[in-house]
Image 1 (cartoon, rainbow, N blue to C red):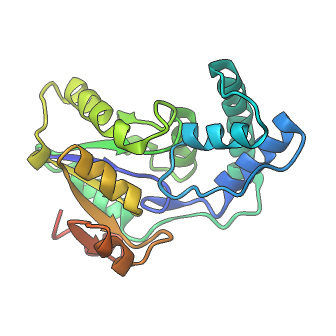
Image 2: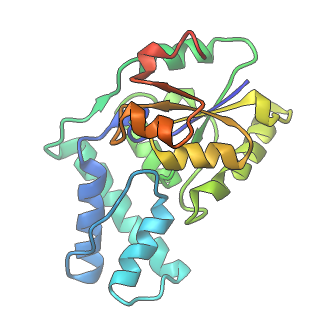
Length: 219
């Protein structure tokens, strides 16, 4: 079985460190505050393009790379020194530990974060040892395009392909649900982010739990 995890709102809550890092990177690069951002389920490439569009700047690859470089520096600082009450969300260590030792289980990431951003967050919250591969948000603006990439990387890691029936996406937003269904997979939605259980049910989650500590029996 393949388990593909989102990060923010699903595994951890950075307490605003990510948003603050984006704001500071925007100010550093453009010299002014950027637009209001909706981070829930968005990819970092999509967010970077929205910021560039706000200032009328073409999102050329080198500009995006430069933006991410500053963002990563700011994110590392905010995680280590910022006034944020971040935390690992309920049930996460137990679920990851159980799945990691379960025969036939393969764990990966399906996240809107960049690889460096994901690594920084997971390392800070001591969850980095659970994931050997993933699909990340620097690759596409559309989260639905990350699913096929995650399946390819899972196959390369495990040495076998996973069918849709063998794949479960775990996330906390309607975009996670849509991303799972775009590859024919099921979605376990957790109401530990911005969206409540009723919202996630409305958007078609295959199963909704209030937090991951209520999910082990279903997993």
